[in-house]
Image (cartoon, rainbow, N blue to C red; front, side, top):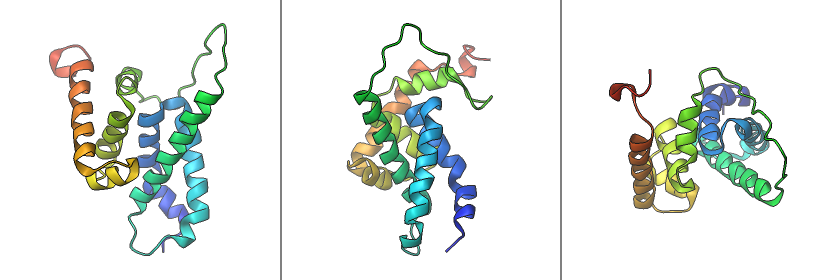
Length: 158
């Protein structure tokens, strides 16, 4: 079994990309931290030969659900929306808006499949669906992104 620090080094960036795609840049850091805190506690019990990346994404998925639920329970009305901190210079806010506009199942399927390469079978296990539904959600999400997020080829983005 690898040292946990090595697991964080190897899979931390992929899990952060997934958290950002599913939750957005503001809540992603919290979900990432909570994912690895939970993983640290459970890591000694992980069976040998397990797919560590899929296991971490499963934990991140559950943490994202917790954050969505907490956000829904505690809305805070404010007169002015505060500026949102951005932690990475390379994050494209327009792409985030396009991702955020997708239905949750499509956004999760796109993030899990296209950002870290999980097979549809594992996405189905994480999201509680079946492989065909996971494949359909990912394909529908990408099709919507192709329509709503212009590419450099058509001259809309430079």
